[in-house]
Amino acid sequence: MSIGKLYRVSDNELITEVNYKFQDESDTGWWGELTLTDFKRINDNDIYYLELDDNRWGRCRLRKRVNRAVSGVPPRYVYQFTGMSAFHLPEQSSQDTKE
Image (cartoon, rainbow, N blue to C red; front, side, top):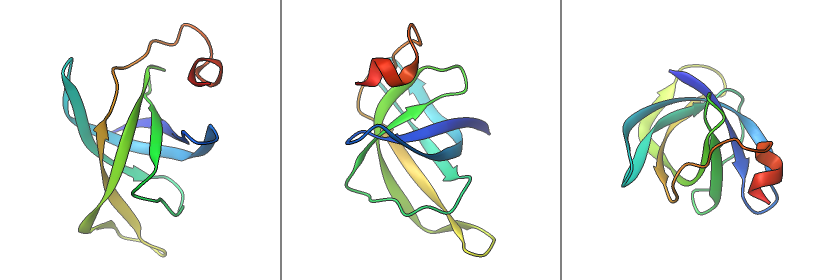
């Protein structure tokens, strides 16, 4: 798995680092699974920025995978992410570009 960062679009707030794995990363769409490195509450209806380990980023939605969790207390759930935009290159810092 690769390490990335998850931001909330509404306020550009860094939520946490994530471990992610692509199931499909094509020009027409991208999706996969991720786990949060810290326990945070995630709203399935929000839109997020996923920043990849190579600093590219794109908008995505998350959906909690039912009956899938990483063992621990509290449990960390597995989320499916689905891309909503093309990936953007890190020409500037990601915070400046996302605004």
